[in-house]
Length: 109
Image 1: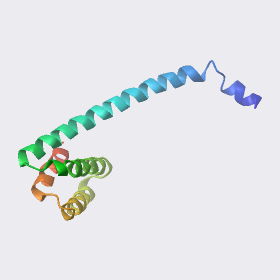
Image 2 (image 1 turned 60 degrees about the vertical axis):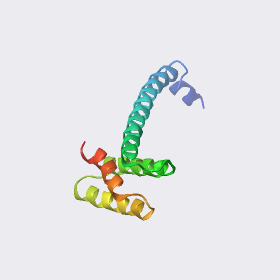
Image 3 (image 1 turned 90 degrees about the horizontal axis):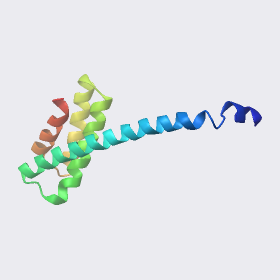
Image 4 (image 1 turned 90 degrees about the vertical axis):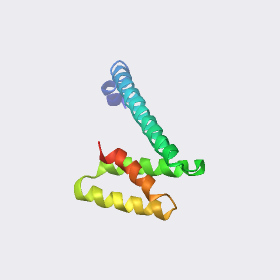
């Protein structure tokens, strides 16, 4: 136990942790800002397409899933994943044309 006290003394760890904590806060704030911007863009598309408000959460969930797969995959595998996710949400009753417009938000970047 004494080794831990010496190795992780109170004068070393807290300043490093505070520095790391500030960086994490910056990353989280940036991620929330990006998500908010994306949500707003999706809501504009939904408004233009005349989508019922009750379906907004489903379309937002689709957009978030598209965001996850575009960060994880690329190339042919991304194309396959996009078609799978689009088919899944189409089977849940969402409009394919609207899903295609939302997908364009991610594939054009």
